[in-house]
Length: 292
Picture 1 (cartoon, rainbow, N blue to C red):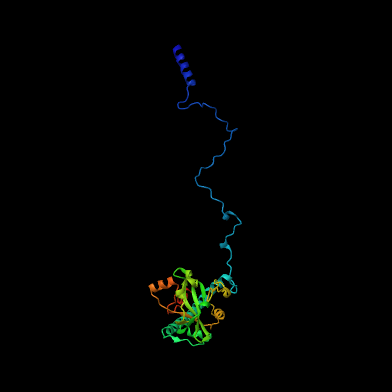
Picture 2: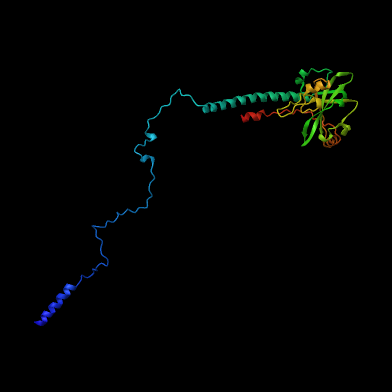
């Protein structure tokens, strides 16, 4: 009986002191939920925030929602549209004008080439300056004596990259002092500008000059004004030169066709080099037609 009681007591003490298997007692005390509140958790997302747009505004109105606007038929156009309309009209008028200029220049060159192939005529003692335009590029010849004391240099003029002058000398006819004419003898280098350096270019006695009746070139806006009192001429003013030398207002361009060695000889001795007998009028009107 005593043994049974002792066994019962041992079993009772083991039951009261045993712990459930798999459960452990916490090491730290648990917080009281009634006194401590944790912040709410935010959802984790990798999508970037969308920037605020105008459509997010409740008062936003799109132009698509606006009512259509009718264009008035009588509304005036701006200056830009008028300028665009004028450009093709102006180009057409300029092109038409260049066509007429091309026809005129072609006929003029044909007439001048016809005159230049004819035999030279003797120059009359008296020439009407107003009629020279009708005989432009007409070949003539005249005899007389050069008045080297009244020589005039026009320039400077370039030839093959070298500076020089155009020699203009009055030609005095025998027995008629008032029948002098102006002769463009040709080009000399700047080194031979002084007459003392070119005695070979100052022929004495009676000479025969063959050349063309011409209307000399005109000055442009960049050409300086002539100074006849100092015998400084930058372009040939026939009226001015004729009044200075007592000559007729007649301009003759002496012609020659020197070969290469003769050209070198004339250049070294200071003999004026005349121009060849050919028509050298510019005719760029066909290019201008395609441009416009």
